[in-house]
Length: 292
Figure 1 (cartoon, rainbow, N blue to C red):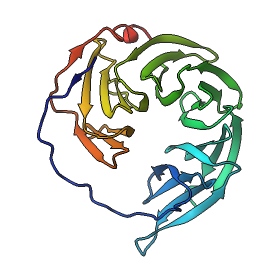
Figure 2: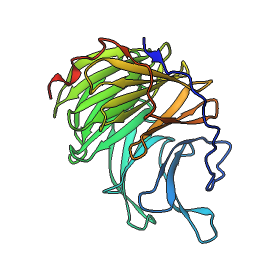
Figure 3: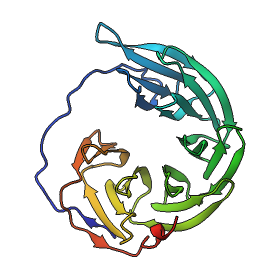
Figure 4: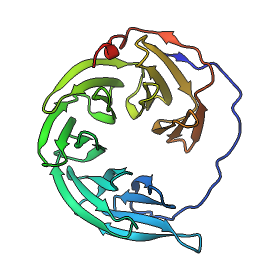
């Protein structure tokens, strides 16, 4: 089991609110992301729409794109280099679009019937031209984004709920409802199971991968975050406690070495990862990075 972080006095600083957009009380916004190189953001919602919001001269955000889809939107990802937008839907489809340079138009590319039910997370890997996804059908799948062909799938018996990918080693990290993390190595049309490990007492609710330090962060319904030092091949882990409810999302800022976490308790926590913390050595994944 991972050791808890050493106690410290948190800084009671608050983030500065730059703006907000009122949504519909009847339909949840399922995901949002910043627009690359613009003062704006994208949102997808259970009202079956994709919207691009740009900041106007008035200081307010207004939609520059309002695009309806045939099913409620459950997740998305945007590639900043190509402006390629991948949207996962409740009906198991992944729909792809290209956004114009001024973010006033989105052009459909293709659709994939990736899952039999709700798409939970989607990732686009530009270097491999892969679309990776997990769904409520308990499957991880990957497709070729050029041909649209399915390349493979892997069943997660406890139900997948978190997904991350390392480009250098082609390792995919999948968190599930039992609290287990599964690591697969992907080839063009097959996958190999590397290992599984667990440290949470609840299900995985969020994953975040730092490809520079080769560290995996996992958030859980047990309210905790665990930092797994995978690249060090020593099996060390650190537990972070700062939420009073399940952890909903994680983001790592490389330039400041800060981890940002959001929880169902309504809290946003910024963790300084340069602070020395107590570690514990385990044998969970000491062999993972022994070969590529």
